[in-house]
Image 1 (cartoon, rainbow, N blue to C red):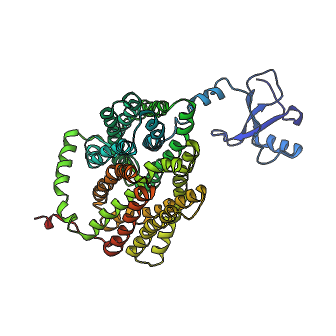
Image 2: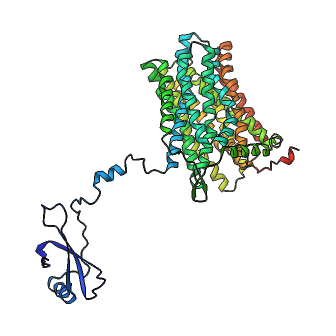
Image 3: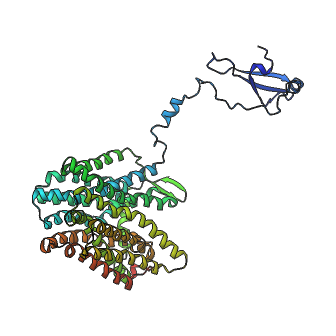
Length: 519
């Protein structure tokens, strides 16, 4: 064995390790740094007596705690290379928890959802010119989406409980995406075109319930609020992207291309979604356990749960009726403006297609800011002792009176330039987002147990204005040739009457809904 002296000029670093069987000996591991031609570090173990060690420390001033090697080591063929480590961490999302991938994919589905919902509001302008449609026909085409949307709300919840939200969501996305791609092929055949838009509505109508079920199955309670906000926040982003991308696509290619491209996005999502994990998980506290429920058992649970729902008791409550009518009123203003504002900006304000679409983006963009402001405002009032019912009434009143006032200013001819009218409408529609801290919280306030059922009831009625209001707006526009009478006056009426009903009958006090009332 070679003898190695511990001289400083040897450029060795030494570190002691415990000598199990020799209490009077110190064992050093010696690692060299001075042999550049060697690819592996030279390691040796040197034994010396305790007295020898002390003499070396005394003469060479070695520290009692030898220095640990901080410098990078030469490559070791026995260890994983950097390339191997990179391969283990590729692709970047490989180590992301499966539930986060599901939530991200669901949020992306909601982005595509609203892109396919609003694309027709832009494409309807060149389509009407090409096929010679009147405003009544254009309104009929746009409203057909809401036929399917309204009819699929409650069935979507039931199907999600039977088969799971994941399966219902992926089928819904594929259905509306395939139907979107069919629009150019069926545009010249009115029954076929209406049927394709009904399919789009059905596919998108089951998606909110499916997403809610998926979140409940895969996300623990501590992460659920953020998951809900992230998923449903995709709707606003989808509206913005749809209104932003549709005009340049139409102007660069043609109106057919926007349906093909947006439909292809959904089909691509459907294919990519198949590669995510198949297992659904349920959460008990902080533990995550895999759940595999038999389909037949789930059907039995669904049947029993439906029998236990106190339907009659719901409709005996004045607060529930106030929620139903208020949801109807708010949806009238929202859906008619969503469908007709681009045409209004183009025809009434003489903006070109691109400018009309840009202006139509402003309300959903502003709504994102108002929503966060409204939620903080409501929570602040409640935390400072203001009664919950009072807070809900304040927020919903702002959500109704603000757009009513702004629509009144926009419809009166006082010589305002187009961009000021657009700004006023944007402010009013953005402030209507206060409803998220008003009406949309009341379902949970009065009955956490049946909140989802109550939301399904009010949301079903709230989809009716999409069917009736959008078509009626086109009919009134043909009859009166007045945007004030066709678009703004009905919305103002429902905003004002909804405010009166809400202030008179709304309540956030917890209510007992039991089957005893049904007998």
